[in-house]
Length: 417
Ligand SMILES: [Zn+2]
Image (cartoon, rainbow, N blue to C red; front, side):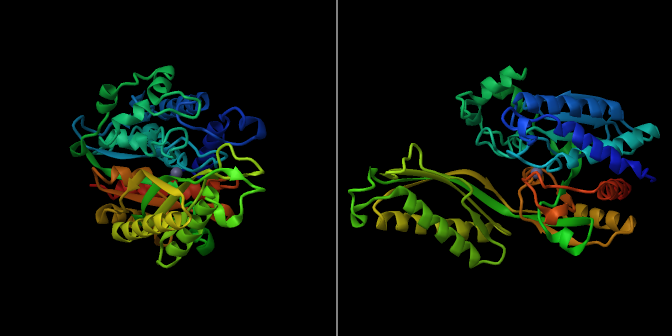
């Protein structure tokens, strides 16, 4: 199947079109922040809807959690569908391609099919997942969670930093904001062939090897937690060092311990990405410290050992420093090995367009790891420039690589029978 070389340029332009929408406080600085159901988020959803309509999808809709769903029918009405897509929300001050590329590439593919009036023996359903990054609410993968039937009812009453509950945010956005409505969008795996996701690598491997594409073998298991240490606030001038219960120093020691522990494993990583002393002052010993822990490993058992060691040692550190340690797990995702059949289709597709077949695992979590719980999945990675930097405005891809990824997607379609 021929793809015009301009397709990569289209995808770059569409990315810019989506990136025009950013939130107040960021947009003025030219930075991209699109978190769940904010006006910028709704504007991106509207752009995606328009792009899908322009591309010739048969049905385009926005569902109860804000997913933008485009369906391109197969040649019979009862044909099963290939499910694909990625997320359109971003981290704060993020990049233009994280998530979005995996929506735009299948839109380009359907645009090509539609312009040729070509129908396949199966349908294609493209989902622009509304939420993956867990920025506004502590409900990471809520969009994919709704599709897989694992939307946590308690999320609806969770509040953002401004005190707005998720249900209220949904209603303001014109969505029903009810659990009943959300439960109706759960997908029946019997109606799907599987799930594939194209995503930028978000790491330096493909860039370093000068390869445009990589076939994903597995997505790492992960756990995220919010933590709190509670000590005793005191006068920074009068309290002797030996008599302090410094909550921040306990958190600092826990952070360094987590680093040391992760380094003992091949492939394990642990990160304290946020750390704060709420209401702290320059002359007050921190009485409380809140911080996050993100821990990942290539397999579930390795992840579990990492987490249990770190939590146990954190308690020991807290005890020794006479502070309390509170640990609240907010996300737990199993490792998601690629389905062998779908992985092989990606490998053949990459080979068919004349590119070297290179396989790698994913250190980042993706919507595919959630979809993995109900249907077979496999991902294709696209090289990021600037050594693969992501969750950063320096995130970049080339139009040429976008073209190659689109060609690989079209070749994948030919592998389905
Ligand atoms: Zn992403």
